[in-house]
Image (cartoon, rainbow, N blue to C red; front, side, top):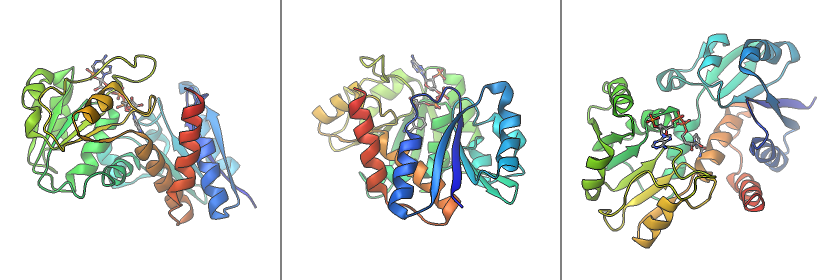
Length: 279
Ligand code: NAP
C-alpha cells in the first residue's frame, strides 16, 4: 500500500516540501505520497491524533507547531530535546517519536563549502529556533569558539547559557561589536529572517571587516542570493544559501521514515526550479 507522509504547518500554501519529497520518492522508487496539512494552532493535538488513527507513516512539522507538537508525542529524541523543537515525526504502529533534522541538515550543507568546523571561530547572527538547531548541531564539531550576536541580546545570552554544557567556548556579542570583530571569524552564519523576501534590501550585519576567504552563509533561500551573500561574494568569501539546509533536513526526515538516505540532486533541482519560477 502507498505510504502517506505529510507536513503539519500553518500556513503551508507556499511550502516546497510536497514537491521536494515527491521528487525524492520517485527517484527512490518508494511508493509514497506527501501531503501538506494546514493545521490551525488550536487543532494541532487533534491533527497529531489523526496521524495515528489514519496510519500516516510520518510527518514534518513547521511554523508555528515545532515546539507545541512535543506535548503530543510518545517520545522525543535527545537531539530534538536539546534543540527544543521537533520537525520530524515517525509513526511506528501508532507510537510517535519526534526528531529534529534542521541542525544536522544545516551542518551537512555547510560542509559542502568548508572542510571542517574544528578549531574554527564561528559567528551566528540570530537567536531564534533556527539558531538553536544550528548551534546544537555545531557544538559536536568542536569549533574553537561560537559567538552569538542578536538584535535582542538577552535572547542570545539565554541561548549561550543553554549550550554552555555542550560547548564551553560559547559567547555573546552585540551586533555592533561583532561587526568590529568580524575579521576574527572564518564562518559567519545568518539565522535571522533579515533580508528575506519581501524585505530583500535588508542586511543583518555589515561585512566591512570581513576576512578574505571566509565562509558567509545565510539560512534564507528566498531570495537565493540575499544582499548579505551578494556583498560577501564581492569580498571573495565562499557563500552558501539556505537551499542546501532545506533539502538536507528533508532528506534526513526521509531517512528516518524509510531507512534510506535519498539522492539530494533531484530534490535540489525541483526546489531551485520552483524558487526561480516564483521570482
Ligand atoms: P525565529 O525563531 O522567529 O527567530 C527570528 C530571528 O531573527 C531572531 O533572532 C530575531 O531577533 C531575528 N530578527 C527578526 N527580524 C529582525 C529584524 N528586523 N532585525 C534584526 N533581527 C531580526 O525564526 P527562525 O525559525 O529561527 O527562522 C529564522 C530564519 O531562518 C527565517 O528566515 C527562516 O526562513 C530561516 N530558516 C531556514 C531554514 C532552511 O531550511 N533553510 C530552516 C529554518 C529556518 P530577535 O530575537 O531580536 O527578535
